[in-house]
Amino acid sequence: MKTLRVVLTLAGTLTAGAGLAAPLQTLHVTETVEIKAPLDKVWATVKDFDGLAKWHPGFARDELISGSNGKAGAMRKLTIKDGPVITERLLAYDEAKHSFRYTITESPLPITHYTSTTSVRAGRTGMTKVTWGGSFKRKNTSDNPPEAESDAGVTKLIKGVYRGGLDNLKKLLEP
Image (cartoon, rainbow, N blue to C red; front, side, top):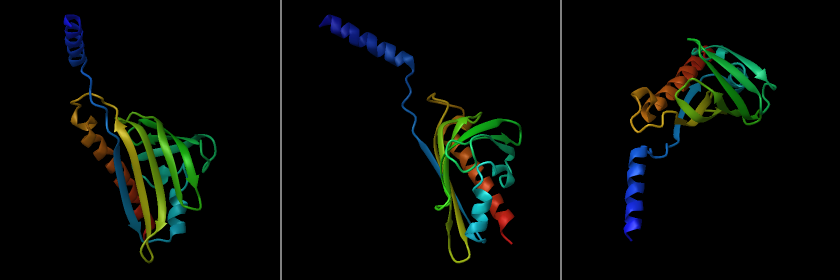
């Protein structure tokens, strides 16, 4: 019995000193915009996996680095305006449903396990609704990360990326 108590005490001490953080939760962000433009016009702008820099002001350029545009498995390299590069893989593409899903494979952003879906749907009369949503975890696994690397910080970052793109898309496509 004394041996069991010593083992349990030692295990408790080691576990407490190990700084084991609680599992990170999966975070979700979804942003939408309604655009006064035909669905086909909006989809034609959004659908190209290697065309994000044409309508998102945060990206200087993008290029397809492997595979074919609109085909699962295609890889793109996005260059952020201030220089860093993000690499993404197209997971699914549905021309008929006007949607695609992708994941980040390499990134300087403080997130991991990122997947995202972009979809274009008919909205109210004369309007088209674009939805951009994603799920991810923060990279920093510590219990007290810096604000920019916290759950709230990375959620704010991704929300800003989505909003910046969607707001500019609306500005570009509306009369």
